[in-house]
Image (tube, rainbow, N blue to C red; front, side, top):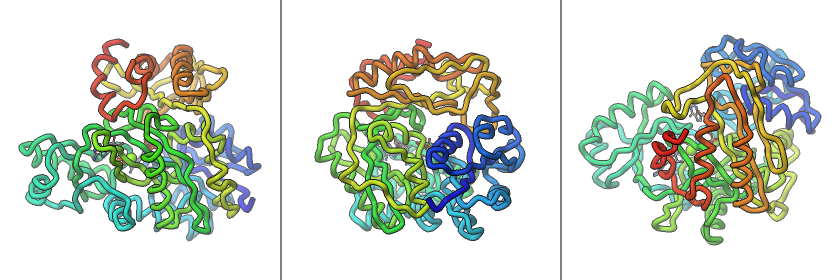
Length: 453
Ligand code: ADP
Ligand code: ADP
Ligand code: MG
């Protein structure tokens, strides 16, 4: 392994996850922490913790200069960006390159090419990967009206720089267009510093299917199967699973092949995810976007393939290439993940920061919990509210669902509100148990579920 010392420019469960993978490979770790995270599990587990700034993300986890200065001072030879924060900022990758630190991810050009959703759509179309029918950038309300008449309603207005479910607005009919466009544009400017918008046909009966890919530095690309992330709220994933249930072999194969084609076309290096939606009424699939980083839901893929995707990322960055050929990658059984956040679902998913009193995650066969939380820890108000990911596996989907229900029943957290009570009800819904729900299913059942908490 060419790498020795890895700087982790992130927090929370993913920082812990990266430290564990480094341990497996015998690599030293340095955790970058904000003042709010000085006593975090990542700070404790890493060989060294360095404070990069005050609690607000803009002054710490989003501050490229502070991150790079610390990495250089620590003598790190590589930097892992995790997900969120700076993970998809081309500027971080290029700053690393300038300072002689290997960025554990693709190069700045690939991040830029895929980070802008419009550029990514163009790229996909050029190589024959189908994209959702939609527009190029739309600048004015007048242009929006013309484009909307072509696409038809309902449609989505999207921020080219958006991510994490933010920057997406649905417009159901013409009278709502002007207002939605103005709000979307203002929000995109505020959230992403880029007001560029475009429009897409809204696929009513959609499933979110995404393909995990790994690319080496020689242009070799493999896919590691797909995940279904259709259980969503506000365009954000809540439950994810692998493999995707109920897809025909032909459709599954076509989607996987399209992801590989795209990754090969941009000579993608490291781990990435190509996201698609499948139109259930047409048996058609469309490219949505590519995420040029490790994803929150990567563990479900690990559980059904036996691969350690973060270790693969480290090996690729270290120049060792892929340890697996496509023919070595097989999936076995079924895995389901749910995101446990510090939110009060009954109160409209209001954030619930504070001190965790009891923290008793379930243990047992087929149960994995990825978390940074311990009893006594404070959940700060400054960051994403993800506390843990509960991942269950079974020989088949039904066994995984049964384990999910049992594991959620045994997961005890007090001190802060969490989404566990909500997820318990979700996991018992007949539609979910059967599998293959569409992306509107959760929102459509939200009131009932909230009422049951
Ligand atoms: P995944 O795509 O891995 O399922 P999410 O889409 O939920 O993950 O995003 C992971 C994290 O990154 C979340 O904290 C989300 O808020 C954040 N995130 C993703 N994209 C962006 C972006 N463009 N700007 C700001 N935050 C983002
Ligand atoms: P983000 O960068 O925020 O993850 P995506 O483009 O990946 O944005 O979309 C997030 C989610 O929004 C998708 O998983 C899907 O559920 C929904 N979505 C996006 N585009 C469409 C569309 N054209 N029709 C229906 N649903 C869509
Ligand atoms: Mg997405």
